[in-house]
Image: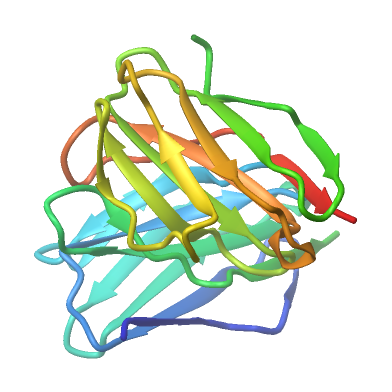
Length: 113
Length: 114
């Protein structure tokens, strides 16, 4: 069955540094992969989508890469700020003709001033 | 509407009772998804609707769980004969049809079965 792995431990970094979060998937080949941010007590909020034929996608301080050979996506936040502290969820798509996503458990990021 | 809404936000029920959780998606979003989220985990897929048609219910844990969307807009997730293990956050999301679109999540319903 499909399996999604994200760093289970929290990532603590200093303000201004680049945060890098990892998402590995096994046993399937997603057509695209989405990243979401979730704050405590709130629902996930969409950040970026990257398709299998795209190596890299950027949006402001965010960058996502997608390596279909390694079955891995990396999510980078440059010049991190305390406001970036949240849980980040990786969600590769599952084939089926619609927008079915399988979510990872998420990685908690804490940016310290 | 402004976003996905869900009601109630909190529901405490006794074991063995039935509960109905409601989701009102963003206007125009024909795709609707139900998820269950445990603390410290990502959302777990339960079921998917395309308009009023329930096209995927592979994630429903057992036959005590059912969902409907009779007019292609508001959806209800019903849990019959609730058990303590059903306690969780239940989230609804909606999106435009087809693949590759972002999903907009509601605030969720926190269900506690005592």
